[in-house]
Image (cartoon, rainbow, N blue to C red; front, side):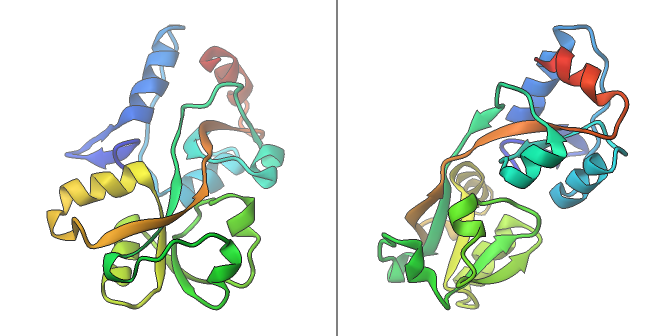
Length: 193
């Protein structure tokens, strides 16, 4: 999920990684970062196997199940992307009724989108796969964060110019979410703050 966090060249790196490591370094707290797919990381944190997981866009479910710091890591726009040739602004999410939209497994996209039962969700493992499905006309839209989409386009220049954002789905703040079931999590949350 670069440029925020990703395993690249054998190292966990990105803006969120830099923020988290700097925050813990400021309190002389040693941490170990491990790379997991987001949905697995959140599941392991929920069950207390991990102390924390990032990058989370909290909803009511996450706020109930995880400990959240007061300060977010960053914010970014979640955009609805269309093929440039068919790009027409979407003013109301009701326009997505019956439309196929690629979504990344385990991601939260905000209450308005996540609660919209009229959208036909096509689940993909990576943002890139959503764009490739959109390119091949297997879906009508793809939902992806602006920052990660721009990074994907830099890494895959063959995709540049093929997609256009047609709506802002959500403008979340993203957090480091701490476990309510890991005994180290409360102290780590305090040190992170």
